[in-house]
Amino acid sequence: MQPNSDEGGTEAQAKDVCLRLLTDRARSRHELETKLAAKGFTPAVATAVLDRLTAAKLVDDAAFAEQWVHSRHTYSGKGKRAIGLELRNKGVSGVHAQNALDQIDSDDERERATELVRKKCRTLTLPSASDPDARAERDKIVRRLVGMLARRGYSQGMAFGVVKSELDKLGADTEDFDGDRFG
Image (cartoon, rainbow, N blue to C red; front, side, top):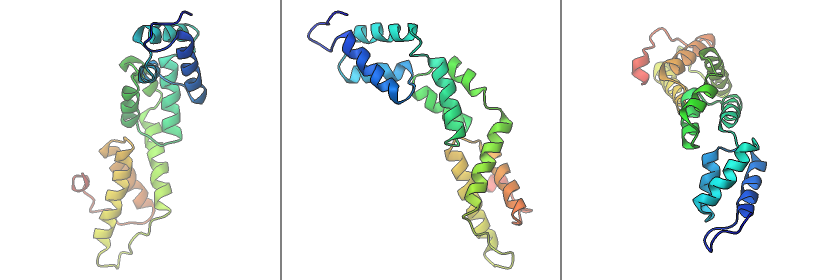
């Protein structure tokens, strides 16, 4: 590994930076390229090091995408749309991202959304039917729950359906629900 010109650093230094970053968690090639550029390594040095790390299977965007999708869906409760955006921001190709996102089917996504709503409902107090402001309070709860799911990347239709179903199970009056009112 030869030292580079007076700019940047050597390939050995760049490799050390990458290996340190990879000890924390898997990273996409784009993330590593960005880190190396921020530390002043030339594109030639970064490419040489990343090509070697890819050949050694230490950098693999397809495997990274699969791990990321599993982790973000399972532990952070993210929906496919949000995870897809995160993968794009990390420089993962559309093909790798789509293949990884295919791990999550609509039933998995609905199940995870339901778990999130149930968890949130444990801390909510639903208004009683005799309360004159019951409908307004219930609508506020619906907006809060649908918004929570939307921020995590679930579609509005799925979010609304899950919230309505879970509120029905809790005994809330949802007969007059109109999904358009909460959009």
